[in-house]
Length: 193
Image 1 (tube, rainbow, N blue to C red):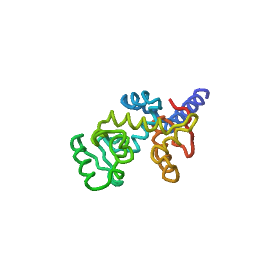
Image 2: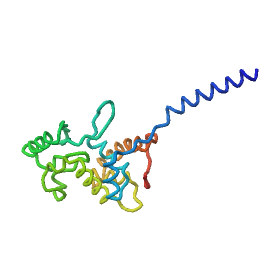
Image 3: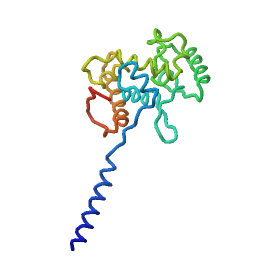
Image 4: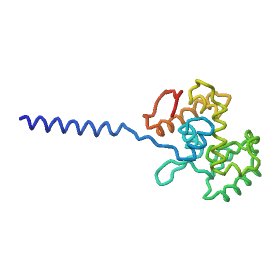
């Protein structure tokens, strides 16, 4: 009888463990390039990576990953296989629409509003340079003791409002995944690793 009770208890613990395992998510470490750019700018690498997932993320081998050769032209992402192809696509886009309607690279740096940050448009397709600039913009938008989600919203739209709130929500979902936390309804991240 004691053996049967022990077996039932063991079975219940295994079932409970299986159920709880479905709720536990593993933390996803940002790749080294994100960590280096973030460290240099003094921001959390998880924030930089979550922003890149939102800005240039694409499905690759079943995973969402940032794609460095992504110009976004008037709201439509154009993904290229190589930097050279993306550069040609970026020059074509500049003939089609004003620079303020074009974003480029991992962090989708706007060619018009961020013109003071680069010399040539294709410079924004260098993944390392793009991450450096994205991290710099995030650092500039962050105030001491400010929630990082507010900063994230200001990265997208410094004036705030509904577009910034929608963006915060979307990037917050990526940030939760990167941090290995359940996706929150409303959460703040003042201090991040």
